[in-house]
Image: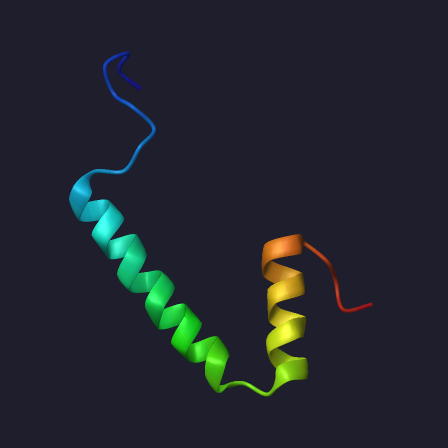
Length: 50
């Protein structure tokens, strides 16, 4: 990585991340509560189903 490069996304990357987050929220919103909770706990909190 170049010393001049930052870790922040470019404006285009930030827009794409925002679109992805909206799409993910839409998909999660369609799930029943227990399924949504299982996915969120697994993905965001690194918890297993066991």
